[in-house]
Image (cartoon, rainbow, N blue to C red; front, side, top):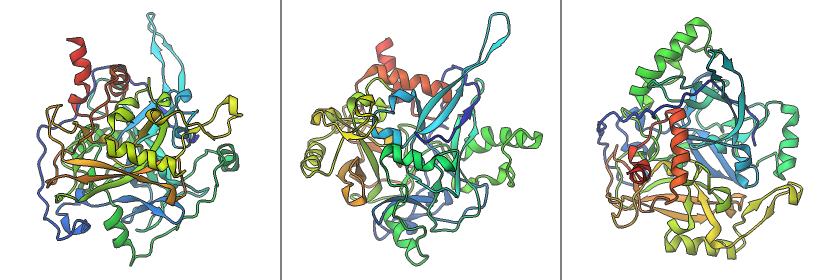
Length: 448
């Protein structure tokens, strides 16, 4: 686990705040002549690309698509899920989580408060888990704001620039708090500390990379939530000296024009731009885990279990395994914590879409059996060519014309494990992260 610590103040159990601002204003973007002409399809700043994940040399890397100022928020994590440490430590997921300290202090009957914090791991969607390590990083992992009461403020984490960043620069974080312990972190996991990736993409090549790898999905909070609910609190804390020690005023932490006029949380991700049928929507990474490392955790509702996947997905995974391009990583006391390939059968394979925004796309099945028609499909490809065989490349493709601002609906059925929805619901109540209320229909139906 990456040991960057994020300290959370008390999160009160209340009904989850849902920031669905009615039907969103749908901004219709120009149709581009080519599906790869991402820039040509934009009419508003929120549709633009800020960062992108790209295969590079023998690995993957995240790059800045535009310049950033020191202290500017480079990424607002669109969604995160805290886990008990034991829920990630036995699989490859342990290489991609961050540390998270949750304040569990509670008020006693006599009016006094009990102290205590819980150390957790946290899975970050977006690019969070896939920034490469550097002992002199240009990003740092931060808690932006926490939800402290029954209010309209979601718990929000992200990544802040430690210095001015140029467009095309690779974005790095430090995987450890103490730089002297970085070698130990990599040696424990059997990973090469020096990833062979380009530190910068040249200006003449940047438009090409952006056209191929910028996501066309908008996910996370929008400008109304930031401006009306979050920014006033950040400004108040900054003026009182309680906020982050930054050069920039909170009003400059985030360019409001880069945020959509709506929230697009879990199961509510939207199209950034208009797309034609067959267009590429997003390419990202999925970790392949044993279902035993996902079952019984709040990760279940965003995971693709074997039984949820289509026949072509099954065949793709079988072919990758047969070609020795896919392993199921395991480590534990019985292996002296060294990573081994522990394959337990194809039906145990579970894909966790932890990078990008695919995990936030609504899952409606293939025949409208959940009340909605799908507008995109999932492709699974090998990741071995990019220096790793512990995951797969996931690609989302439009199955019909899609308008900008339209909710994306995937032709994969949602998970059927009700207890995992309860666990996720509890986490959503604590964090107040935006989501589509329909994702918890399975719980409501059970209670009826």
